[in-house]
Length: 332
Image 1 (spheres, one colour):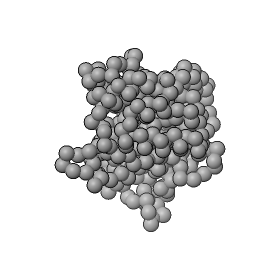
Image 2 (image 1 turned 120 degrees about the vertical axis):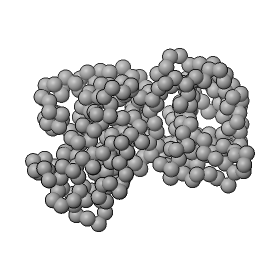
Image 3 (image 1 turned 30 degrees about the horizontal axis):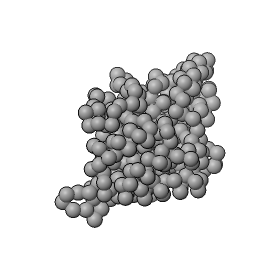
Image 4 (image 1 turned 90 degrees about the vertical axis):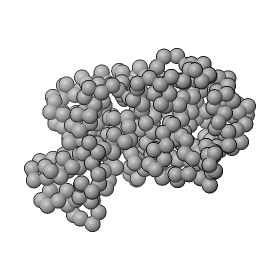
C-alpha cells in the first residue's frame, strides 16, 4: 500500500507532527529513515513507501509512546518492522552482474528475467544534508550502488543488524532492544553479515571525487554527447562493466562496450546528459532524441571511476526515476 503525504500530518509548522499527544518528528527523521529503508530494501520507491507507512503507524500509535526511548529509536523500531514485513517472501533485489557471465554485445543477448532490480537513489533523499564529516563519509559509502546491492545478499535481520551497527553506529544492546533479541545473537548476526559482505569484492571503498575524477567525467559527457565511441572507450578500464537494468545483459571491457554502443545502442546518438548526484557519487540523466522533437527521458546513468579510468556504467532505463532526481520531463 502506498501512503500519500496527505494521510500523515505534515511535519512543518507543528510542534507535534504526529498529532497531540505524541512525540515530535523532524524532517531530518524522515530523511534519515529514507536512507535506512533504502539500504534495507534496495529501492527508492519502496523506501519512500516504507517511510510513509512508518509515519502512519507512528501516528496511529502516538498515544502509546511512553518516552522510554528516544523518538529516533522508536521510529527505527517501526521502520525495521515495516521493512521486514515488506521483505518477507520476496526475492532479493539484484544487479545484472549477479546473473552469470558477461554477454555478447548483440540485441539477442538482452534477455529480461523476472528479477527485481536494485535502483539508484538521489543523494538528497537518502543522505544527511550536514553533519560530522566522518559520519557523512560513512553514510555516502553505505549508499553506493555496489554496497546496497551487496546488502541484498544478507538475510533481512542480518541486514538490519549490519546497517544499525556498522553504518549507524548503534551499540549492540541498542540493536538487541530494537529487534527484541539478545546481545550475543546480535553479535553473532553481525559476524555472519560481515563475513558475507567481505566476500563481495565489489564493495571496496570508493575513491574520493577529486579533480582527476571530475575531469574524467567531464570528458565522458563531452564524448557521449558527441557520440565519439572510439574516443569514449579509451576512458574505460580494461575490466569496465556496462549494464542496463531492467535487462539482464551486462558487458565487460572497452571492446564489447564499444561494439554495443555502435550496434544496438546506436540509437543513443544525439543524446544529452544532465548531471545528478546519486548513491554518493556521480550520475547523469540521459535524454534521447525524440522523433516528435526535442529530447525525452531515457535513463539515469551511474558512472563510477577510480580516477585513472571509468570502472562501471549502469544505465537504469526507468524514466519514472527522473522526477525523483529533479530532472525535467523533456528537453527542447
